[in-house]
Length: 187
Image (cartoon, rainbow, N blue to C red; front, side, top):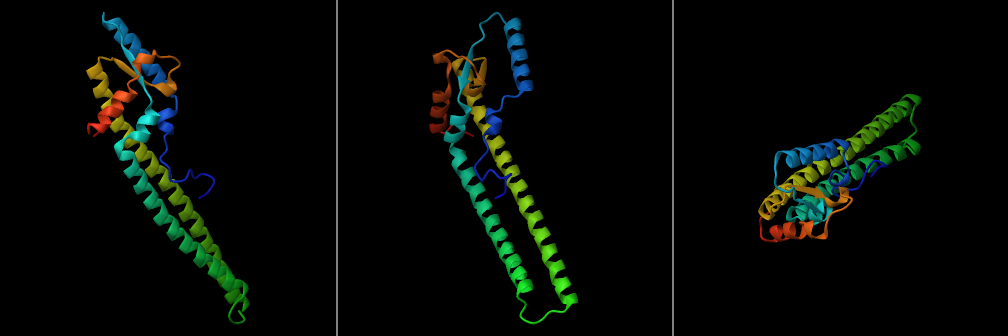
């Protein structure tokens, strides 16, 4: 694809990117929970990147995205071939072309080239958008399972281990969430 394209792999960037507003919200929640309750705040972590990769719906979502991208890539290849044929026809016309005919063919080639580039950009943008939508949908489903496991285990707050500087080794719920996936608890 183009320089802006990341291929058709699902983008896990929203799962890893530390957002200052999210951090502020977490700190506020921490202070509110610790100030409002006498009970100890129990914090755990999960590896959202690993959970994303292991989530049962990720492979199917990736396949759908790949299939769509391949179909659109094929459409673009056909359009590119038409452009190349038009360009070849302009360079080596089957008969001598008048200036007016040559100018008309060149204008047609320019229009078609512009249309091709716009369509290619539109498809790259749509691929990125679909990738983002699928990633967010899967991440939300994972969060539901994480919340269920955290509640069952008695944790008040669960952080992504990629955004955590330190956590006790016993406070990682990733394996429990993976077991929940295997038990069919994933939405």
